[in-house]
Image 1: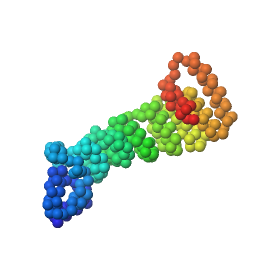
Image 2: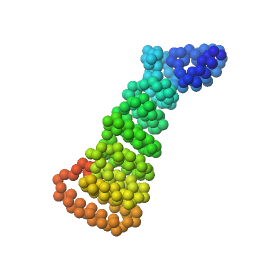
Image 3: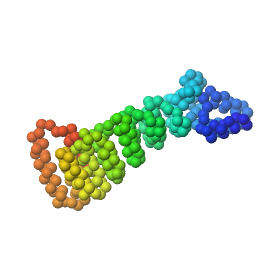
Image 4: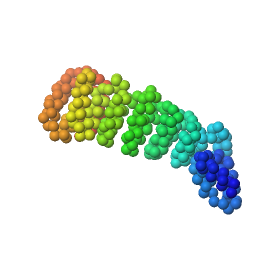
Amino acid sequence: MTMTQILQYMKQNQLVLRYPVYKEALRTLKDAGESDALLRKVNPHIDTESFGDVDALETMKIVADDDLDRGLVLILLRKHNLVAVDHLLAGTMDKNILLDSWIVATIIERNCDHQRPDGALLAFEYSMKMGIQLERTSYLALIGMSIRSDTSLKVVDIAEKMTLAGHSLGVYQASLLIYRLGCAKRPTCAVKIFDLLPEAHKCTATYTALVSVYFCAGSPQKALQIYEDMKREGIHPSLGTYNVLLAGLERSGRISEAKTFRKEKKGLLINNHHQNSVPMGEKICNLLFASHLIS
């Protein structure tokens, strides 16, 4: 009865046992013929079926009182028990316990590898609450996971934190992300990503991606306005830009305007034949917006 009262208190306050204590409590309940359901519910971070005696000894060495949560997370990650990591991370967040940034990055990496967007985003939310700055690769993994799992609204938050941490998406990743958000019918998110870019990365590729967003959203006039804004900024269209314009205008039934841009594209093809080099932004644009990609 005393153990039950203690366990109820632990449940209410999101406290957990170290493995050696858990093992002793489990043995006591078993010897008394009592149910261990409450004990297991209070300690979801422990998978007794996968822990052996060696792990118990290792746990006692690793997990000191001050490092309880860190040690448990590391053990659970090694055991690939990501559900238990979710529970422990949520409790850690509530208790304002700070984990090392590399541990949070590892949690994100494991969840992304196992296609668990909720677990990866939970770790991201923890990093935001605790003010932890992650490496660029972690942010990119989160963005990729969010796009694949159709949680596009989180992408802007991730990109903002990535920018604040001093990391850049890069022209290629930014252009591809903006384009994918357009395909997902998320023009507002796409514009926010574009606005986060440094001026040096607002180039042919990223502008063209934004043009494609509005064609996907069924707003050809807005797409043409973005194209005009690009030219006013002194940024030259590339073959990929014309591919996007032609495909979008033809789908919108604006055939006469498409004919004008088709002539401009032919002129560009002739001029490019005599050029020795093409700016990197235009190369990336041509790579991303080849005709087969936007058809």
